[in-house]
Image (cartoon, rainbow, N blue to C red; front, side, top):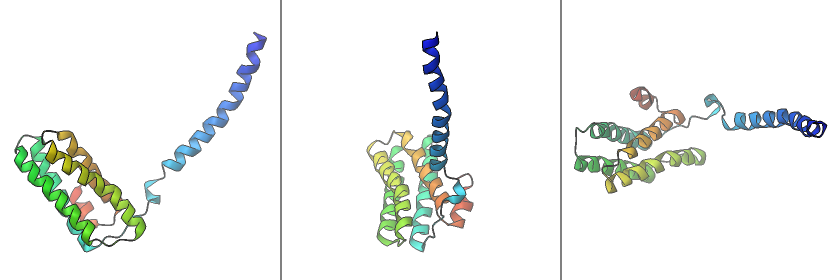
Length: 150
């Protein structure tokens, strides 16, 4: 029994140190939302994101069976077109641009995938999450007001 007490004591002494270190790592990763910058927008970005939002909202009708796959493909084409217009015309600072790319890449990817697999309704929620991230990360008051829960 005595042989087990020493390793157990050493283990107990090191657990709080590891727990404290893990808590620091989690705190660093989970920075409060207030600490995240909200980037300014330009007119092409605002127009493109509003067009994307309208198309994604319309895809809600597809999820509920109120439109067919052909109409969903048309909406996916619209999303791709708006993303391409943003890429061609939007001018942001480098950090804001990097943040935007993390938002528009999933939009472009899922819209393209939806055209290829029109029955994959699982592709629509990630587009909603990307729009919600835009509302959180970019200063576009009209977009945030119109998204409600986004």
